[in-house]
Amino acid sequence: MANVPERIIFDEPEVKKGLFGRKYFNPPKKAPHFSNLQFKEQYNVTKSHIIVNPYSGKKKGIIVGNFVKNELLNSKIDVELHVTDNPKHAIEIARDINLKEGDAIVTVGGDGTFCEVISGFMDRDDDSVNKIPLALIPAGTGNSQANDMGIVDYMDAVEKIIKGRIRLIDVAKTNFVEKDKEVVRYSHNLVGWGLGVDSNILAEKIRFLGPFRYDIGILLSILRGRVRKAKCFIDGHLIESDFVLLLIQNTCTGGDRLRLAPNAQVDDGKMDLGIIYHIGRFKIFKLFNQLKAKGSHVWNPNVEFFRFKNLRIETEEPTAINIDGENLGTTPLDIKVLPSAVKVFN
Image (cartoon, rainbow, N blue to C red; front, side):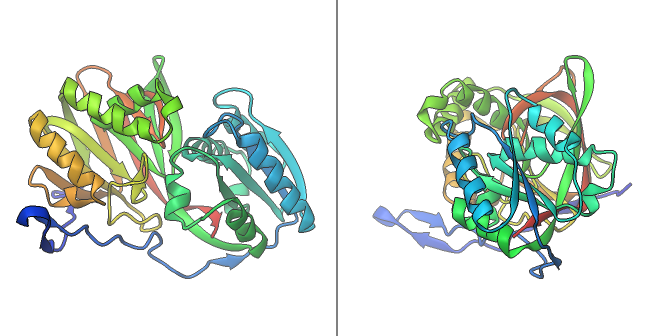
């Protein structure tokens, strides 16, 4: 185990003057989503298994799924359409469908649906994970992964499948507790703990507001001012403190495309961890405004960033966690980064 965790040090910010001479920091430069810009292989898709979440986004999954189906059929690619009818159904489909060389799994939904597909895919009892690529068609609310991958829209996503250029991405094996049982999920985007999860739980109750619900959720959570004591083991190094929030990122953005971890890359073999320690409500409001300003929170003196391969969070009482935008279970939480675990079209 490491004695000291890997610390992320950001370059000194460029200070500028705004209205009435007020000083502010220029946003940090965003790292490229992929650390390795080379495509790993060329893949010829002969059949696609489309897994559609009909409730994703504004319940437009079926419409998007049929659009993708027709475009692929027009490109001489066979299609098998699967529509989920309950939470976790996508896990079952991805785990149990028959796959062979030339096939691809296409997810129509948001980050949460893609998480379920990857989780089922990783749990298969064959070697498909080493052969079959995954495609992401953004049809959710935030679409953080698709946004970071540079997928512009449905047609752009379909074109990437047809072109068949493959990259490798890391995923995080997450172990947590759900209804007194240990559960495993594979995260591709982020894992949240603390104020971020509180806000997401509140935001889910006002989904009709669309992406704006995230701002409302954050505002209400800050006003509540909950702080939690926890033990955070970063590659074996213990940090025990009172925390407001832990930002655990495989990708740069999360939620409503907030730039949570500007240096995070999806194929560097590690995840980025932002720690926000116990501070007052006024300072949290200021920090949130910095976060909204394309990631200027990285220079806040109450925030530290690390990079890790293994992470464990222990709390005195079970505390809610969020994986890829979905509120799933509670601590204790273990995260292990699996480098280059999944093939994706890009």
